[in-house]
Structures are given as structure tokens and as C-alpha cells.
Amino acid sequence: ANFSDPWAGYLDQAQTQLASASLSRLALLVVINLPAIAVALNVLYQMLPRDRSLPPLVFHWIPWFGSAAQYGQDPVEFFKACREKYGNVFTFVLLGRRVTVALGPKGNDLVFGSKHTIVAAEEVYSPLTTPVFGKDVVYDCPNELLMEQKKFVKVSLTTDKFREYIGMIEDEVTQFMDNDPAFRIFQLNDINEWGAFSAYKTLAEITVLTAARTLQGKEVRSNMDKGFAELYHDLDHGLTPLHWMFSNLPLPSYRKRDIAQEKMSQFYQNILRSRRDSNGDYEDDVMASLMTQHYRDGRPVPDHEIAHMMIALLMAGQHTSSSSTSWVLLHLADRPDVTEQLYQEQVEHFGLPGGGFRDMTYEDLKKLPILEAVVRETLRIHAPIHSIMRYVRSDLPVPPTLGAPTADSCYVVPKGYTVLASPALSQMDPLIWQNAGVWDPARWYDQHGMAAMAKAKYDEDSKVDFGFGLVSKGTDSPYLPFGAGRHRCIGEQFALLQIGVIIATIVRKIELRLEGPFPKPDYSSMMVVPQEPCQVCYRRRKFD
Ligand code: HEM
Picture (tube, protein in one colour):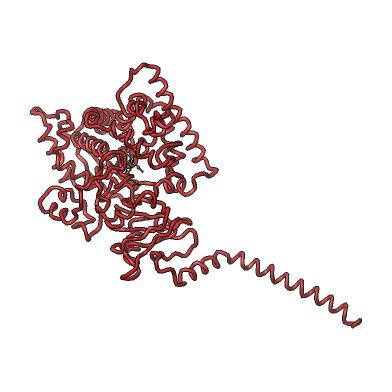
């Protein structure tokens, strides 16, 4: 024992050293292979039998990241591919969230029509919008208050106001075409020469100017060329998928966003103060109307909330309207035959005997079937918002007609998931629309087109009031570019007017052509905008 003891100690030590060396080697191996192990475990997990009440899970290799790349690159194609594999209801992983997609008119109904106690928008959208709009409005307040805020704004979007806006929008477009470098060839007054401009960039500028002149008021419009445009850009750069997923990162775009929000809020509050000091000597616009409103509990709307609502309106209308208007223009450039019909419609209604046009009126605009169809059809194919999301507050049963695990059971979307509807997909569904992928405005007015529309009919008559006026229920419609239910758009009538007047004014003045292939949609920002280059060629018309 005496002889063997020192060896035993040495062996023990060597064994321990060996063990710890292999442990650290193992640890090193594990660390190096951690990503592979995580991927393997994630794949294994997806192969295990699942709770049958859960909607099918879209296969993905990387945990947490999930299907973010496919969804981010082309959400519409991603949904189509998943529908082929899993049906109308399925769940995918998006940067740690579980998102259950509900497709088709019944999916629209589930997301737009479910009760607010069960599905809510604020949990999903607030991280993106609150740092940009500001505190206490839209998704940074209880939903009942949002309904009241929507009512306050809606009362100032009246037909009388729209009558005034038409001339203002026409005037802004005319001034822009007469002065902006994008229309240099137009300004040369030579009807034989062709020029070109970027549809999206140019229409984005025209849209913000027309919105400033009408909805935002005189003070905002007159500041557009001073500091306002810069603040607007910094705020706008805070509305990206990155800012949505991570609402606060130590990056310059976040710092600029926060500084711009503070300055913009002060800018509006200064206007409010000087309006109050002026004893009512200001225009009767949206801001003026908000200054007189009271919440149901008798409380007037505080200045910071008015300021933040004005910012929200500016941002909500900008990309939606500008992308829609640029898609309209691109399609018109691609289809000179439709542009000619549209031009002839203008000549017929507004043409003057010696050439040129008389001013448009609100009543006239309502009687222009080709202009209306061109806008409607563009919103069908290019809905600017491809994903409408809600946070699931308590378990949400999926109607079996949408999809079910077996004939006598149903899927349940668990609390904590996000549900997503995509009217963009139902608006392009070949099962509903004839030649679904073809831009064909005639489907909205000629006999052949109307027959196809009749097949897509839904209940337009039943109305419901969520606190901001009656809206058609229509949550199960296949055509919902402005959404439905309590979060339905309140800017629809204004947007249709704005887009219609901008397009009519441009088409009166120039011919359009597309050079090169039709631009593809760019899904990398929050809205579906045309990918650059999206040049439109133009030539001045003889009479404008
Ligand atoms: C809501 C589309 C223009 C203000 C919505 C929604 C959609 C939509 C789909 C519903 C979002 C959801 O359910 O999550 C559009 C389109 C537009 C447009 C396609 C133009 C072509 C405008 C304009 C304004 C505006 C010009 C402002 C004047 C709003 C507001 C909401 C809304 C305040 C309500 C948000 C809520 O209740 O959660 N819009 N919009 N929109 N939109 Fe628009």
C-alpha cells in the first residue's frame, strides 16, 4: 500500500487532468457546434408529434430567426407557397414570434372581425409607431380612446372640406410640374421631346406637399421648404422593419428618430399656442377641429395629443397614398390605351372648346368610372399594406371552414401568438378573380368584368359602429385595401380624392410610356413600393 499510494495519487491527478481536458475539449466542441446543435434540436423538435389543436408549423432551420428571410423577401409568394403545403391557416416563426397566418376572405374575417378583448393591434404596432407618433395616441392608449380619436379626425374629413381640397391638390401638382427638375422637359414647352422621372420618388414628394396643403394646414405647408421636410425624413426613417422588431437600439437612425419626434411635436404645439393667441384667426382645418373636441369624459384633447395625432395622420397617409399613386402611374405608362381612355374621359367632362380644361369639382369626380376603376384596380393588385397583424390576448378558436385538424375538431391559436391576415393575397386569388394577376381596370365597370365581380360579392349592406361612425362590416370581403372592423382606415375618402386628382392632373398634361420591364414590388420597407429603377417616360401634351 505504501509503495502504490504515490502512484495512485499521481494517477488520480492525471485522470482528473485528462477528464478536465476532455471536458474543456467537449465544451469547446459544443460551443463551436452550438449553431449546428441548435439547428438539429430545432429540426428534431419540429419532427416530434405536436398538439393537434395547433395550426401546422412552417418548417424552418434556424430557431428564433424562423422564416424571417422568406417572409421579408416576398411575403405574398411566401404565403402562397405555405398555402399549397399547409392550407389556409399555418404558423411561422418570425424573430422569436409565432405568427399564425389566416388566408382568404374567412381569414380576413378572423383577424379584422374578432373581438378586441381577444385580438389587439396595439401590442403589435406600438413598438413601431409610438416612438414616431408620440405618446398617448393611436396605439399608445386604450383602444376606446383610439376610437374617439378616429371620430375626432373623421368629423373634419367632410364633403365640404373635400370640395375645397380638390383645387388645392390640383394647384400643388401644377406648381410642382412647373418648377421641379423632374419635369424639366415638360417645362421646356416642347411637345416632341421625351423626359423621364422616378415614379416613386416624384409621387412621394407630390403626396407630402398635397397632404400638407390640405389636411395638415397652412402653417405646415409654408414650413415644408424650411426645417419640416428634414424632420419628416428622420421620423420616416424610424418606420422600418428593423425599428419594429427592435424599438430601441443605440444606432444613429434611432437617435435621429427620437430627436425629430420631439422637435416635430414641439413644432405642432407651437402652432397650437399661436393659434390660441390669435383669437380664432386661423383656417377651419383638421387641427382646428381637434382643438374643439372633447373626450366622452368631458376632457378636452391636450395639445401634445393633437400634435401626435397630426404626426400620425401625416405618416399614415404618406406611404400608402404615394405608393398607390406611383403604381397607378406605372400601370398607365405601361398601358397607353388605358391612359388614352382616361385622358378622353377628362376631355369629355372638363375639356374647353379652345383646348385646356375647366377645374374639377367633387361632384364631377364621382362620375368618372375610368379614373375610379384605374385606382380601384391598382389597389387590388398593389395593396400597400401586405400584412395586418393582431396580438392574441386569449386563445382564439379558428372557424373549421378556414381549416381544421380533423372533421370534428378545430385549430386554436394560443394566447401570446400573433395572427395575420393578408388582403393582398385574397385580392389576387385566382379562385375569386378572373385573370387575377392582370391589371385590368375594365373589370370594375364593363359587363364582363362586373360578372366576375358578382362572384366575389359579399355583404356590403350590414353596418357597424365602433365609435368613429358607421362602417360597412365586410370583414369577410376578398377586397379590403382599407382594412375592416374597428381599425378600418378613416383616410379612405381623402386618399381616393388625393390619388384621383393627382393622376387626373398629370394625365391632362403629359403622355406616359414605360421603358424597360415593369418594376417589381419592394417589400423591404413597411409598405409595398415599386422597386427602383421605376422610371416613367413622359412627353408634354399639346393642350394642357
Ligand atoms: C388604417 C390602408 C390612406 C389614416 C388603415 C388600415 C389599412 C389602411 C389597411 C387598417 C390597418 C389595420 O387594420 O391594422 C390605407 C390605404 C391608404 C390609406 C391603402 C391609401 C391608399 C390613409 C390616409 C390616412 C389614413 C390618407 C389619413 C388621413 C388611417 C388611420 C387608420 C388607418 C387613422 C386607423 C388605424 C387603426 O385604427 O388602427 N389604413 N390607408 N390612411 N388609416 Fe389608412
